[in-house]
Length: 254
Length: 254
DNA sequence: CCATCTTTGTGCACGCGTTCACAAAGACAT
DNA sequence: ATGTCTTTGTGAACGCGTGCACAAAGATGG
Image 1: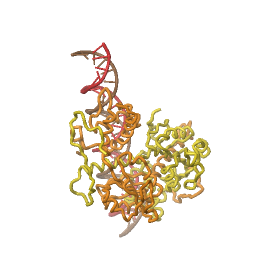
Image 2: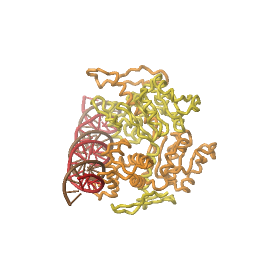
Image 3: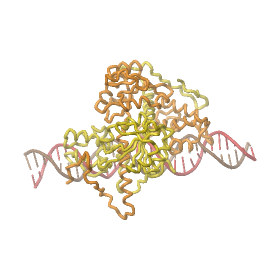
Image 4: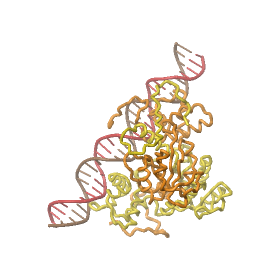
């Protein structure tokens, strides 16, 4: 399968590109909204607009799932909702545990987007004994000691880590050892896991840093309004030492 | 008003690939950790391992920034920290507003990763009058009416939206109108913004759905090679390959 | 100063994902 | 039926990102 596609007949080909998988939830959300408004059918153009993508991309994405549209008409909303849900595995209920019930963990526990899409918070787990028994989002927090038992009793295969960075790897190891094979990591750490375990990470500060990069670039181009030929290789070095927590480098390039 | 922005690579000036930009914060974090342990230099191999990436990729990423390494030795940790920080725009302080102080907004306000990396929460904003004045993370919540004034008075260019989905677009429009040009969106909605405004989205339920997809696939291929603890409920609901003809259950099982 | 060793920086090839553009397929009107 | 019109599904081209493999660069030791 290295070079050419083994060209399995289109229908249920196993190879759905990752990029497509990542967009399916987007389509599903848009379709669900249409469904709630009792819209019967939708064209690739309309749906693409609602999902914020290109219509050609959407059609190609759907082509990996099969031929679910009708030419000249569009896609049947209900039918497509079902097909995508099934493809994503949302026709079954996924029990999920959240480990680390701080501010973020509590927010996640209260987040409505889980239950409404096939996920069920099976347990909240925290290392702080003082938290034990305290209800968050209507679910009593349990102590970390119970982790393995909770995982096994509930058949949990998806775990959410919302602990401080220092505890994340340890929690991760215990989750994996107990049988969890998919992890959503909110802790700002690189987790190492054995093969066969999926990890997705959500890092708030990284997202902000990426925005800052673009913001800085925008600011740099703005101040250069009406420039003729600005040397591009010389980034501005302004802003002397920033006042507080100055982390000023003492090293200079040769 | 195209929703998507056609980010013009425009000039060959400082074309750092998006994929590289997205990894810089990762390197920065690893380097900061090394710096705190007073490690003077680090090789691409070591740093790559710490950041969870391939060493060739890391070297190529750094090559876009310049030649900051020393062959035969590696990279100077402090110097590299500074260079990446500068490239990301973290040598200056970015005031940020958070709109929507529910569970998630409060968690974000309390999140330590902001302040420690050049971001400062300039204000918390909520539409609920009952929230006004109430301190969250030591910062009094202000009412939405003040939004425009806050943005302008503080020179805020980065906004975080943590409102319910229904309010997100409206909040977005007001932020943009007031001068915000970068938005981090936690609401499960596609935001449309004018050109020149960057939007990054973080969607918790989408991440879980992607995990569910892989989890379902793993369950489907389940054969040997499993460590213990197979969940009692492994409802592999793979429907038989139905032909391309017509009807398939239109209702998802609970 | 020369030899050797280590590690960077990068040219190159490859595969994935995106986009274009159009033929095929069906709906609908006549 | 037949023609027209709409929209899907997809072959093909293109661009970006990744990983390999190696020459260049500098450190180090004799």
